[in-house]
Amino acid sequence: MKMKIIFFSLSLFLITGASFAQKDAPRSIISEKVGIKKYHDKDELDRMQKGQLLELYIERIKLLVKTLPYIAFATKPGVTMSTLGIPNTKDNRSTLEDEFEASDAFLETTLNFQRTMLPYSDKSNLVAAIIFYEDTMKALHQYSEFR
Image 1 (cartoon, one colour):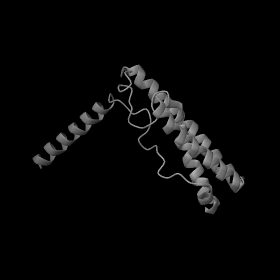
Image 2 (tube, helix red, strand yellow; image 1 turned 90 degrees about the horizontal axis):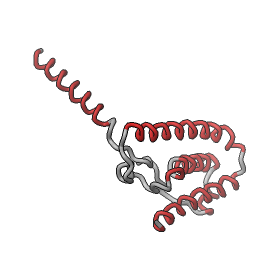
Image 3 (cartoon, one colour; image 1 turned 180 degrees about the vertical axis):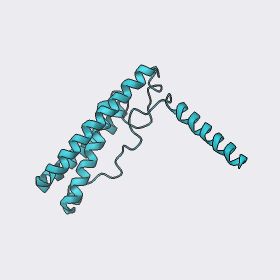
Image 4 (cartoon, helix red, strand yellow; image 1 turned 45 degrees about the vertical axis):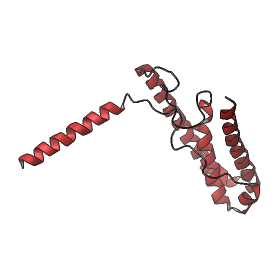
């Protein structure tokens, strides 16, 4: 019984310490979850069902919202404030966190709108928009090569 109490106390201590240590760690400006696994051509998109196109369209919007505002800093995940020479101060971390929260709120509202209204769009318009979004992401890769 005494061993269980010691083990539990030690575990709680380690978990608490780890949670406090992570707060000051630099956070990536662009989310690690951002990325396109596959680009599509018009013929491939034309063969897809409208429901698949809706999900692909929404996925591309998420990607752009989580990337485009930050291209002056980075175009790929993994870049932190410290990497860029920005001091990792409490105020800077708070500002970055506020930005992420605002972006998430914007994205949630936008996606709710898209999920409600997009089913009424023409399939050809969805295909054109997805191609445009993917071309924009390809241009981001070229942009990072120019710097």
